[in-house]
Length: 405
Ligand SMILES: Cc1cc2nc3c(=O)[nH]c(=O)nc-3n(C[C@H](O)[C@H](O)[C@H](O)COP(=O)(O)OP(=O)(O)OC[C@H]3O[C@@H](n4cnc5c(N)ncnc54)[C@H](O)[C@@H]3O)c2cc1C
Image (cartoon, rainbow, N blue to C red):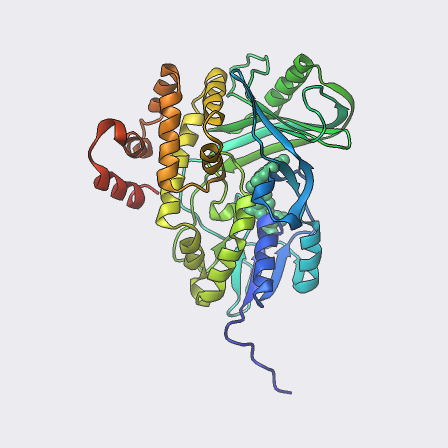
């Protein structure tokens, strides 16, 4: 019997990994009529920890529990973000994908042999198994959290405490941290002491002690501890090297935001864009096609600005971090939203940084300027603060977009 050839626009594509990025991309590829295989240990079984984003960043299909009220606390007071928050729940998407594509419960490594012509996408997360990336200084986000049944009078059900930068009340010399908390309608609380960014991972024990002290000071009543959660992942590692046959997606593609550590909402939003790029590319050029679709010169420049902000964040002490975020969330909502979500143009991000600089205290300004003493910092600071100094526009811009990212 003659074997019927597949139409030329149909590729055989293996997505390696089963995290949120892999699931969204495999779904987008399958919807475009591609022959998709997902390979990961445990197949499409979801993993345990809590993933969240703001509701307006998500499709209805992946919205789980909702937290209609989200707030930020700093020493300057409370800010209502007027932006609902939600847990991401892709359980239905995983079930539908399992029906529509081939799923292999298998680990992949560099010695894995692929069928001829197979397109391979490495979505194995922060430390990709197949994809090679450029070298870059990595910062780390660390947290220790507990899930409890209990009561916190400052956290009514349906509240997401996005950040509480007031001191935990422990002077241990470590980097600043904030409380992140979710208060569900079912009486469950997730309470997490989080270091936004530091040049090395923060010991879990340090965060545990801070969390205990903070909760005592808040008067949080814990009836029953249901579990705990340890967070430690790198932020803003290098972007994929060019000229690879394998493509990346999710954290492996550098989608982790250098200013927040969030990546999942962005991966979900970019999955159709990347799927289109893969479908349109020659099978042996998908790696570069995906990099070009996502990491445009504008996106690279924005990332450089965000990395500058990350460098500053790594230098803050607790008081400075609180003052910085107090000023940040006092900006008009469209301004802080665009910067936080990474949806700004470079021009918008630059004007947000300028507005922040202008509204900061002089000691915070000095701290922000101190971050400029690096190769990236000098170029970014020149670019951001150009309005204060005048000339050099074209030269700085070219340098920024071509040299540093
Ligand atoms: C406790 C915690 C809470 C977090 N909260 C948030 C949040 O609220 N919002 C947010 O945006 N981010 C959050 N993050 C970060 C977020 O989890 C990651 O950035 C995100 O999961 C990256 O998605 P990904 O699909 O690219 O990679 P991953 O989710 O890391 O998935 C990688 C996949 O690759 C598979 N894999 C690994 N090695 C192999 C191999 N050799 N062969 C085959 N498969 C392999 C793994 O099994 C996994 O399925 C949190 C992280 C932690 C630890």
